Amino acid sequence: MGFRDYKPGLIGLATSFGASLCCALPLAIVVAGLGSGAFMFTTMQFRPILYPLGLIGLAAAWFLFWREKRRCDALACRMTGGRVNLVLVVLSTVMMVVVTYVDFFLVEL
Image 1 (cartoon, one colour):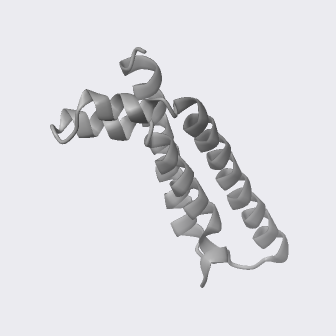
Image 2 (spheres, rainbow, N blue to C red):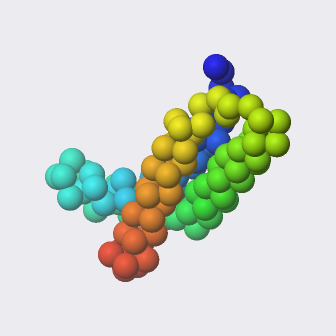
């Protein structure tokens, strides 16, 4: 099993983590007392770039996952890394929901 087998899950996880860099991660660091408001302000200026990239990456991860699942169903084969990919893509979706909630409901710019 190589990178190709886990590509959908890793893409989803990486892009949702990237999207959280502008919103949820700075807020968590400031709340934990490890950062300052200036750190949060600096990272949040990249929100118009990171948030849409996170959504596009998450959509791509789901697309890759379902495409591979359909291919394996058509060939009557077992999907390599299917459960791991599903868990990673679902975790990525949960991260994006948290980022969306923090970005649009908790943070007022």
